[in-house]
Every structure is written in C-alpha cells, then in structure tokens.
Length: 304
Image (cartoon, rainbow, N blue to C red):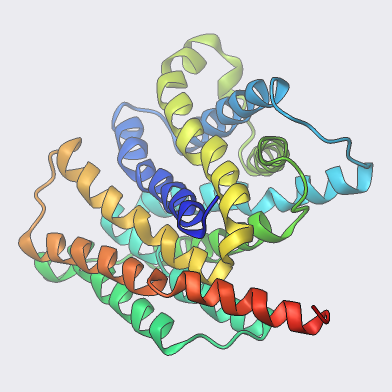
C-alpha cells in the first residue's frame, strides 16, 4: 500500500470518533445512563471485533505480549469513560473541543518521546486546526458559553488518553495482525470500562435490548473500528501526522449534529470545518517526501 492509503485509513479512524457524540446524545435523550451507554458500547464492540478475529489471520502470542496488548487497551477504555463523562455536563460542541486538544498534545509527545522536532509546516497545520476547531464548535457564534469545570477536566483527560491510544496503536506489537491486535486492545478497553462502571444494569435483558441498538452502533465506530484502522495505518505514518489526520473527527461531528440532531450550524462553523480539512491537507502534503527522506536516512545508518 502507498503512504496516502495508510493516511486515508487513519483519517477514517478519526471519522469514526466523530460520529460518537451525536449518537451518545441520542442515547441520553432516550433515557439511558452513561453507565448503560458506555458499558453496552464496549461490550458489544468487543464482541463484534472478536467475531471478526475468529475468521481472520492470527499469530501465536506469548502471555507477556497478550498482557502488553491488554494493557495498551486501557487508553481506549479511558477515552470513552472520560469523554462520555464530559458530555454529561458540557454541550457536545464544547466536549469535542477539549477532546480535540490531542492534536497538539500528540505532536508535543512525539517531540518529547521521539525527539522529533515538529516542522514549520506541521506547526502551521496545528495552528489552522485549532482555529478551525474553535469556529467549528460554534463557541464564537453562540457568544457567551457556560463552561463546567468538571466537564473541562473530563474533556482534557479524554484528550490525553486519546493521544496515548494513537501512540500505542502504532508502536506496541507492530507485527501482530491488525484484527487480532484490535480485539485484544478492545478487550483491555472493556475491562477498564467495567472497572469504572459496574455493568449491573446490562444483566437485565429489557435494559440490554433497549440500549443494544445504540451500543452496537457506538461499539462499531468507537471500539471495533478505530483501534483496527489505527493499527493498520499509524505505524506507517507516525503518531505526529496521525494526530493531525484524526482531526477529521470534528468536521464529522459538526456535520452529523446538523443532519441527525437538526442543530443549527452557522456559517462560521462551516468555515471552521473547511479550515480543519485544510489543516489536515497542509499537514500531509509533504508526507511522501518525509517518508522517503526517513527511509534514505535509515539506509545510510545501516550502511546500504
């Protein structure tokens, strides 16, 4: 596969997260609690990816490798817990703004961990993304916005754990088949969620059947697909560019809130969506060249 194809896969992984806030709000409006929504999402999403894993290529793993992948699923579970908690006290547009801070956090982590100084183009791209996110969230259009400190803390924690998920998806056990790796990451996420939210409500069949349509949809787009798509593409493009590509979640969230929730989307919000897409393009326009230079440098280091 070519680099742009891996970039597209990561972009689609970000889009998956963009659909979540709209359908979580729908589940809340239907009377389901954060415990029921989060628990059903991770339970059904994990079952879904394991069904696919049964018929997919697998690799024999040692107990230590399995344990490492299960632990790597902790950020996946924590992202759901923290983000859905923030949605309890914040509007969806504000909650996603705080989650969206992973864009610069990811580049900062890459600088600290891998000693990779961000290029001028990447800095410009992040600046465009942040400006676009403020516009797309409708903060300016709405005027005065009431912000909950509790929701702010939950939202920023979700940004940190989402950044961690992007990093582990591209760095832990790279040789493990993507579907198998995604299944183990999801299992780790499921265990994490159940440690926070005891799934006693889901034992009752009427509750489980009622929340199942929401849980299945959220499980597909919030548990099964993102770690799978990130596992396939992230190791080829790196977490720095990966965080820029996953900024696709915010335009998707804005578009779905307009189409599904019938929320009014102002001109400035649509401008923000355009800026975000432009920022993603700016961050990736030189990606093939960067990849070639990286390969060339590695070849020199090993004496080829």
